Image (spheres, helix red, strand yellow):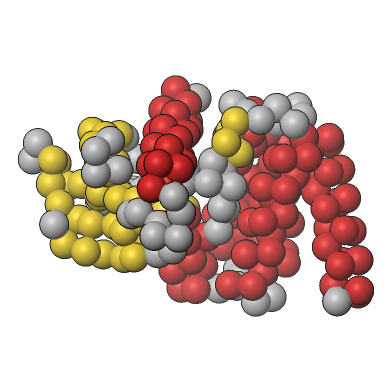
Length: 221
C-alpha cells in the first residue's frame, strides 16, 4: 500500500480492493493509553465512522462506499473518489467569485441533508469535502459536479440543534481561516442550508449562540 498521509489519529493509504481504487484508513495504537482501553476506544470510533458513512449513503448523501473492515488491524477500506479535488483546493483555485458561491450553495444543501439525517460530522472543513466535476455539456458550460463528504472519524448521531449548530460553527471557523475574505461565500452556505431544511431556524439560532460564546472567549483571552 502507498502511504498518502499520516495524522494524529490515523494513516491513509492508497491501494486496490477487488480491482477497485481504494483508500485504507488505519487507526494506530496510542502508546499513552492502556492497551485494553485503547483497543476499545479505537474499535468504537471505527464502528461509529462506518455507521455514519452508511447512514449518509442511505440518506442519499455522497460519501465513500465502505468495501471492507479489518477490525484486527483497525482498518477501513473505502472507495477512492477518483477524479475529485478537495474543496480547499477548489476554493483556492476559484477565489470568492460566482463559482465559489455556487459551491457554497452545494455545501449548504448537502449539510442540511446530513443534519436532517441526524448525523454530526464533527470535523467539517473544506479539506473534508471533495468535488468531482460534472461533464462538459453543449456550449462548453460545465454541469454541476458532485460534492462528497469524507473523514467521519469524529462523527456522531444527534437530534440536538446545538450539536448541529456547533458543526456549522466548526466549518465557519475552518472556512474563514483557510479562505480569507470568503464571508460572502459562507453566507451562501447558510442561505442554502436555511432553504433546504425545515429545522434551519433552531440550528442557525444555536450557531449564533455558539458564535457569541466564541467572541466572549476571544475578548477574555
